[in-house]
Image (tube, rainbow, N blue to C red; front, side, top):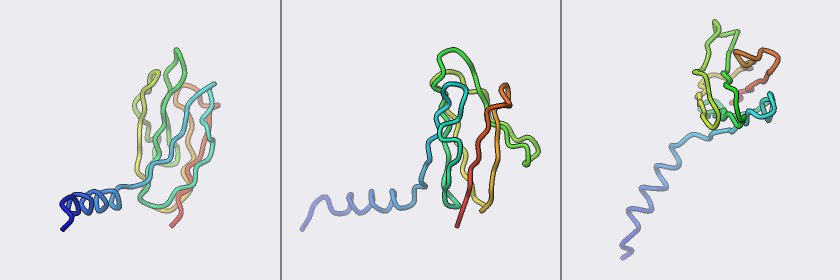
Length: 104
């Protein structure tokens, strides 16, 4: 009998339930990559890699939904449940733009 088998099965079951997370770096006053494609139920995490400035993520088509301000080395994560195209920009720097494309 395998002693660790129940633990391994439990860990595999847990990881199967976890969503995928796409990473977006905020660096040089840009979102990198500027476009990410994910599946419904997956998440995107934005991390500020600037040295001295804060950023946020604003979704104008969703009534201006905005993340908290992210200071250097801080991050914010959002899960996307519905298929669609989610364009966004930085709150304090609206020239910084990006898009999340959510497929099935």
